[in-house]
Structure formats: structure tokens, C-alpha cells
Length: 338
Image (cartoon, rainbow, N blue to C red; front, side, top):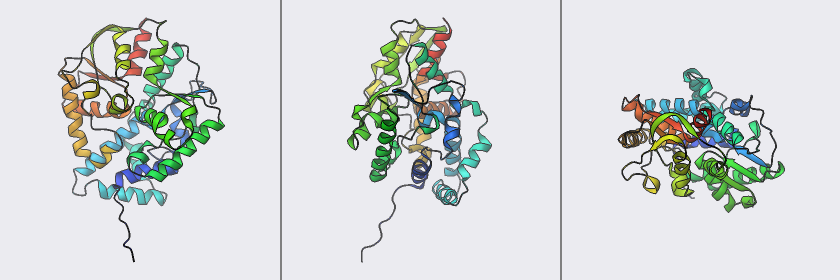
């Protein structure tokens, strides 16, 4: 008789993976809540070109709250694995402790979707026509892939493709690097989705910004943090830099050598924060210090995980003078100043 195989996936990843499979988002909340950020933007729900918002930006405050909870648990005598295991069991019985904690601790509910609202404004100002699937937007399922849950990822990929096909989607502008890589490269291994064109937000902006002038409200020194998936998987290294350098009043400064494809990881992404919370925080502090050492007043990146990690790193460094902005926010502010 063969021994039963042991589950080797950490409880934190299992919890998030179950959220994706059951609720089609990493926090396991309702689809209506996920699309709340776009309710006043009058975006068409059906279009050949869609804006793919992804979980990370739609749940910014919620993810910060959950990550904070995991790190606090990890430093307690219990550790983080037991509470995450219990959270998974309780969620299956109808009680989701993590979501309840999120509702109690998220101080600024309006923080959810701020980057997305700016991104929509930027794309509209560039004359791009697009829609947003709203509460019909599926999860890309990237964490299932990185957790080694191959069949679950394949099943999710087919659901993605079938939904896009049924809605007549021919082009996707995706803003989360992980989602973009998954939609463009990973699901094509299991579906015929290569027929759908996938662009990252920075590509869409660069392709359409020739007719506009960007100017930041004041003179400022800016550095840039390369998200791992954007630089290493999608090879989108020059695109964000070309956009930043095109903005008047911005002095662009690179880190000494930890930039571009050699950029230091911020310690976030693919559920790493849920499995190794203490190491994740150390990496965040180290990267935040490297970026601050440039003398920049603003750190720009374009990944929800990187934004969260760098902000936390600055908080641990007790640095409240350097600001962290998403690329979409920087562009939006530079449009407003004209």
C-alpha cells in the first residue's frame, strides 16, 4: 500500500490559491467589491480592447493589511503557518478571519484602486478606447503557477481564454506585471490565447505619448525600481525609463549598479510575503535603502507588490521624506500640471 503524499505547499499559499479557485481573486472577497473602484468612471463593460486591473492594485489596502497581519503572527510564539492554516479551515466553514481583520484595519478604503483610477485617466488622455470587465474580470491565476499547482493553473487558463473569447476581447492592456506575464506568456502554453494581443500599461503609454507634453508640477529628483517580472520576464526595462525621462522638471537618477536587469528584488510577489514574512521585510528595507541612497525625492515603480514593499521598507527606516509613486500616478500628476 502506497503512503499518502504529504502536502508541501505552505498554508499561506494554499489560503491564497483557494481564494483564487473559489472567488477568482487573491483575497477571496466578492467580485462586486473588487470592481468598486471603477463605479464612477463610466467604462464600457464590453470592448475589443480591455483594461485588465488585476488583484494587486484592486486590493492595495487589503493586501497591506493582510501582510501586516502575517508578519505580526510570524513574530509571535504561534508563527504564521498555524494561523494561516486555521484561516483556511474557518473560511471553508463560512468564517473568513483574514477578511474580517481586513475590514477592521483598513483605515482608508479609498486607497483601493487609486493607481487604477490614475491609469484610466492616463489612457483616456492618450486617446485610447478601452473597456473594463468589472465584476466579470477573472483572476489570471499566476500564483497557482508559482505554487506548483499545475492542473489548477491550466484549468484557470482555459476559463480565462473562454471568457475573453465569449466577450470578443482582442487586445488587453494589463497593468500588473505578474498578470501581464501570465496573460502574455504563461497561459499561451495551454490555450490559443496567443490570438489576443497583450500589452503592459507602460507599452501602451509609450506607443501613444508622442502627441502630448508631460510636466511634473515642480522640479524633482526621481529614481526607478524595476519590478522583477517586468524587467526579467517581460524585458520591459527601457519603456518606463523613456516615459520618466520625457517628463519635464524630472531629474532621473539610477542606483549605482542595482538597476535594470540587475535590480535588487524588493522581497514581494508570488506569495513570498506569506511564506517568508521576515525575510521579505529584510529585503524590502535593503532595497528601500539602496533607492534612498540615490538622493531621490520620489521612488517610482509599477507593481503593486513593489509599491507595498518599498513603502514598508521606508517605514522601517523611519524615512518619511521620500515619496513612493506608481508610474501611472507620476504620469497622471504630470498631465494635471500642464
